[in-house]
Amino acid sequence: MKISRFILVIDSYLVRKGLVSVLNRIQGVRVLREFGTDGPLGSFLQHHPVDFIIISQTGIDRSADLFTTQPELLEKTILIEESLNNDPSGNGHNRDVLTTIRLQEDKESLTRKIMALLENQEEGYLETRTMELSPRETTIVRLVSLGLTNRQIAERLYLSAHTVMTHRKNIISKLGIKSVSGLTIYAIVNNIITIEEVTSKPVR
Figure 1 (spheres, rainbow, N blue to C red):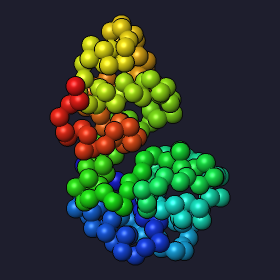
Figure 2 (cartoon, one colour; figure 1 turned 90 degrees about the horizontal axis):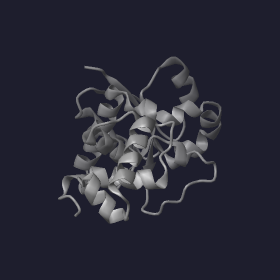
Figure 3 (cartoon, rainbow, N blue to C red; figure 1 turned 30 degrees about the vertical axis):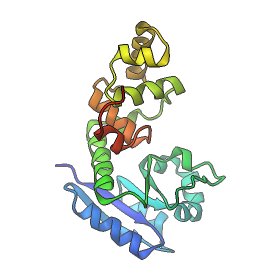
Figure 4 (tube, rainbow, N blue to C red; figure 1 turned 45 degrees about the horizontal axis):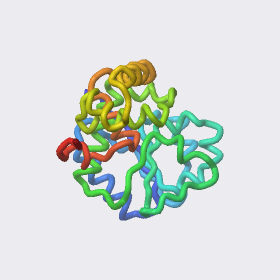
């Protein structure tokens, strides 16, 4: 099994230890290093390849120069949202991160999201994020993840079934993901849909 290497860049000791506790329970995960209020993050990354960086907003703000000169790090970055208010900083990095997790999420939800990321990585889906979906395509991915058929999506969006099928072909072309389960993982990782919505009954 592939071992995915994580580092944590979080000021709060309690939050760090809570996340380490969750990560240590997931098979295939190894926490390489924890950084608090200060630490040689850039130097560490030069000498230690990592797969995922879990970082707080203050950590991103402190390391803005690093993420500006190495924007590819954002594709590995999981941003922690510490409040319900989504107030992205002006540096523009937040919209480019891999995904976000919220401190309000319970351990089960966090575990599922991390496992979805790991599965996504193993299947190679993370490499497909460079082509952005249109708002309509994003809506269709969400509805597919909720279990709706092409006909049901067409009725809900007041489109023809042919148009929905065309959108789905475009989605496959952009993402390289054909299966409903693959699209669902993509939707969870990219915050198009929540795990709770996926596990509940399909919306009709």
